[in-house]
Amino acid sequence: MGKIYGSAAEALYGLLTDGMTIAAGGFGLCGIPELLLNAIREEGTQNLTFASNNAGVDDFGIGILLQTRQVKKMMSSYVGENAEFMRQYLAGELEIEFNPQGTLAERMRAGGAGIPGFYTKTGVGTQVAEGKEHKDFDGETYILERGIFADLSIVKAWKADETGNCIFRKTARNFNPPAAMCGRVCVMEVEEIVPVGSLDADSIHLPGVYVHRIVQGEHEKRIEQRTVREA
Image 1 (cartoon, rainbow, N blue to C red):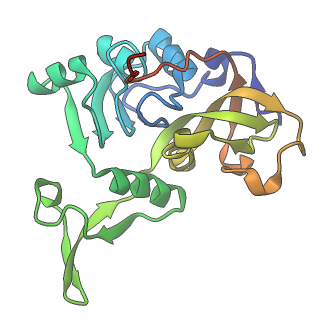
Image 2: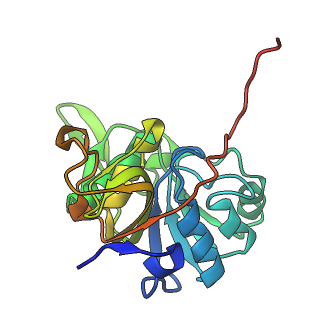
């Protein structure tokens, strides 16, 4: 069965439902599945829970869905660049489940591996640990974190073949692979689709077995914080 679709809207057809949980790739503004996020905005799906490293900025990434009030809850580790995110949270309009960055990545990876929970020392003695099971191992206290099992994964890759074997570029590799793994269905947007066999097998970051639908498109590649030196 072919995995390649003609547009982001076509790739998401039949997958979006109100109240669903979506795992989204991206690190800052790098590797954000911007085409798929725009398609979700156009579809108008409501009461969404997003598991993502961040919420983008006000007019890019998941931030565009905050503008349209389509997001009910964020499971994130960093949200510092989005003024609307902050406004909605402080006004009690948005639920937030904060996660240490490594914990969030591992929760996604665990879900993709079928692991319902794991113990970690990260967060012990802080607000992160409140309400979570504590257990001692070898004299050290750990807290139980749950794996993330999303209804849908949306990710962005640099190159992929027709079966979904793909390569991510640089920091886009941080969250896209675990986000792709933990969804019941994974839709991936790419910059370039190449023939099967043209990717070096040792360079593939995510096997195509995790990817169900693929769409190719043009991407903005916005820079989050531009820092330059005076001439």
